[in-house]
Length: 228
Image 1: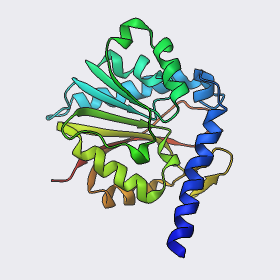
Image 2: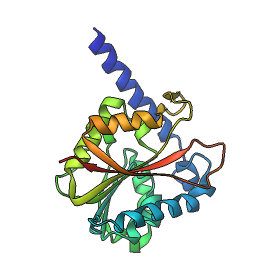
Image 3: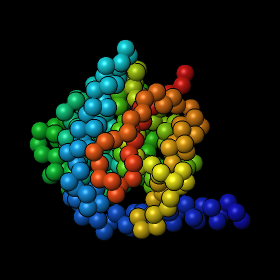
């Protein structure tokens, strides 16, 4: 009985998030919850983080990236497409993906490999496909169990020296905080460390995003590689 109840709760968790995003405008402002003005600072912080990774003794390649929870493709347009030869977009909202085809423009579109209309809980990337898998402001929509499994699947999809990058809000309270409005959770830093361990990945670099408005959650970038 408990298993059935848990499955029903998880189904509601995902369905409620899907319903929430179905009402959100397919714009940068919509993607960023009304904080569209932080986009430039956000992208700059992400560029610096990637720059550090490319300076490693064993840096990731620059052939293929994946933008998970891509929305209309903001990160693909201003970050990933400027570095990688090809980018796949994964986004459960097909309306956002349709808008991405206009928003990205012809030059960026020529670099798009696939548009994948599915939730991350159902995403199964091919082995040995990506140099970078980018996940930003989306993993709060996964249950803890699905998040661990998602990271495991992503780690199997990395090429040699490939990296999973997670950029997410973290709580200052040390506790998980629920947002019933968009059906998501915000996890504390320590919980992410525990999840990475359970997913058998090494978090070898982590940096806090700077210059964000004080009213926002702290945001951290994590670089992960599979433990071999």
